[in-house]
Structure formats: structure tokens, C-alpha cells
Amino acid sequence: MNLPKTFVLIFFLGGAGVLAWKLLDPGGGAAGNIKVPPLAASAAAGKAVFDANCAACHGRNGGGTTQGPPLIHDIYNPGHHSNDAFLRAVRMGSRQHHWKFGDMPAQPQVTDKQLAEIVSYVRALQEANGIVYRPHRM
Image (tube, rainbow, N blue to C red; front, side, top):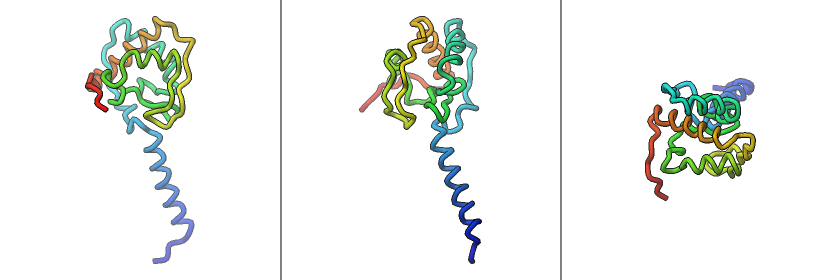
């Protein structure tokens, strides 16, 4: 069968588009499936700070975007990324290491209290979505 070149080109580009979407959606579409539990006061405060400072890259409820990885992902379980790892990333920035989004810049506008609230919020979301402490083994 001799297919027109435009059909083949459209088919190829469509497949490439689907592949690119999958590669750029590190949460595997999880952003719409994230369970948000009832939040304690600290986590609720953390949600407001997260929404204002983190969601642009890390997505609504930490589900990830094309700009930054999902925090509601097992790679960020407390056994692999401790609370201190989150603190260091916000204070000093973080070099690209698990994902291909580039380096994360420091976020000096976030206070220590706000940072603790963000971590409380992210950990509450993680726990509600089955992401719990697992020892990290290299």
C-alpha cells in the first residue's frame, strides 16, 4: 500500500507528540489523581505557601509540570529524600539529578517557618497517596 507522504508525516508527528507528552509528564498523569487528605493547620498553611512559591514548577498538589518534577512520587519518599533534603533544595537550590528539568534555583523568599509548613504539606500529600518511608539502598 502506498500511503501519501503527508499521512505518514502526520502519523509520525502524532506519535512523537504522544511520546513527548509522556516524557514531559513525569507524574504519569498523576496530577489529576492525587488524593488530598484533610490537612492539619501546619500542612494547610504549607499548601498556601506551596501554591504561591512551588506550584508553578512542581504542579498543583505536587503533581509535577513540564517545568519541574512531581513531589508526589516515590523517589521523594522520606527514606530517599529526607526533610533536610527538601530544606537544602529550597535554601541552596538543587542540581538536576533524578529528572531532566534542569537545576532548581534556591528560593530565598521562603522563610524557615514557611519551609517547615511546605514540608508538612508535601509529606501529608505523600502519605495520603501511599508514599511512605522506605530505606534507601544504593
